[in-house]
Length: 303
Image (cartoon, rainbow, N blue to C red):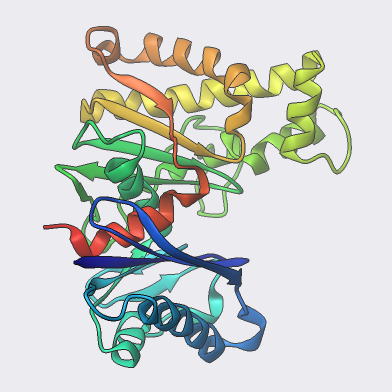
């Protein structure tokens, strides 16, 4: 019997799990990411997790490979993290090859949003399609594009930077150098920034704004309407461009779906002729924070 191992490395948490080729979790581990102790310790922890899981599968099980999802820009061919706000200690380090050599097994390094999109396509809301887009809403906004069951990487591995689609040409400045990027108008960070701008309260989290919206606060509701419009502009343009059957959203702000989705869908209908004349779906992802783990595990299984 074959099995595969997926690793989800974040700025705070490290998770790993083994899966059957049918997508069932066999064994799972989780812990904290020890970035403060340096690159070698992080690599050691990843290898240790994988070895511990591998020890559970001695005998009749054969390891197909290991997939690792990490935040940041990945030079796919080299297996190197080129830039990551959360994993600075691992930048420009041959991480894929270092881990592969220690384990003696093939390793695939992938962007975490791409891995999450692959997970949703394999075992989540996209099981019934081969082409989809996933938007991950969080501190920023990431994205993954799947075509024919495969991740679209682009020339250098930077395809799918959905958070930097321009939705307001004269909008808020973004750290990327642009103005009006989607993530400056629809991420969790944008929600808190809007709350400060309209003097809803100081030091509010996106969850606090959601709670205020639940209580019927008109200014909180206004914030989510603004978020919905920004998402609708971006998704409407993607529908026009790609004509995919499915566009998924995931991440922390998703509980506020009922507050931002009406404005989002109205914007999509206004801006996308394709949407109005097809059965294109815009839905919530279903795997939650396990999507990246599923997707990382599936990487060695892709034909």
